[in-house]
Amino acid sequence: MKERLDVMMVQRGLAPSREKAKAVIMAGEVLVDGQREDKPGTAFAEKVTITVKENPIPYVSRGGLKLEKAVKQFGLVLAGRVCMDVGSSTGGFTDCMLQNGASKVYSVDVGHGQLDWGLRNDERVICMERTNIRYVTPEDIQEQPSFVSIDVSFISLTKVLPAVKALMDQNGEIVCLIKPQFEAGREKVGKKGVVRDPAVHREVISRVAAYAQENGFELLHLEFSPIKGPEGNIEYLLHLKNSPETAGEGVTDALGGWTEQISCVVEKAHGALD
Image: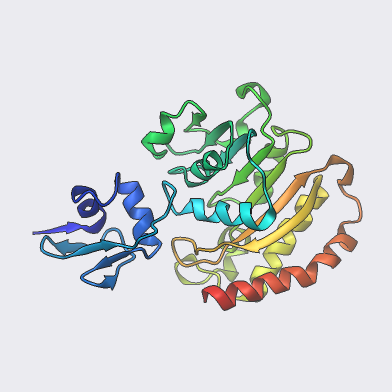
């Protein structure tokens, strides 16, 4: 009789939950009979040998690795800060925030029952499931977050950034994940929803960056995500600061200075992940 790999890992005590097992598997940290396996749903016979590499993901999901890179590359200091994780899902970003000293995290997601049980029961975490960030008001939260992460799907960041801005501290920071497949026009998205053309990547990053600056955010940093999305899309980490006084000012000139950086990051991303 065969069983799913993620289920087998939990049964054998190799992972505390199926969510954690999935994260470790998808990160390429699991070997089945000596061969790397990155699909949690693949079924194997009971007699197989399952090995987890020495340094599995330190977060409840591999999403935590994305924010971890931002923390290190952008010099983010989260200790003692009230944070918000928009599109929290299992809670990889939330977990990363807490491990970096966040005092409170509002975990917001339109779905339900996804947030890791340990995080759900952590007194520092406010679980806001079945919640669309576009309809959250300042009255729905106790404090203005000074740091917000955004990792959303099937919607453009241009639809989400205004809602987040209305909730956050006037000097707060954002790290948002730019996903080309949800920013590009339908005609530019390939099979299985994958966008491979570097030119399209440059285009969507520039568009999101310009929109952010037009709407009162300062552009700080850009990097590529260390791991691809579920279907193999390369994604990008954009670091913004809430800066109302810059709204609508000098957008073209400012982005002109970013054009070379955007091209450089896209080139590095494809060199590392393609």
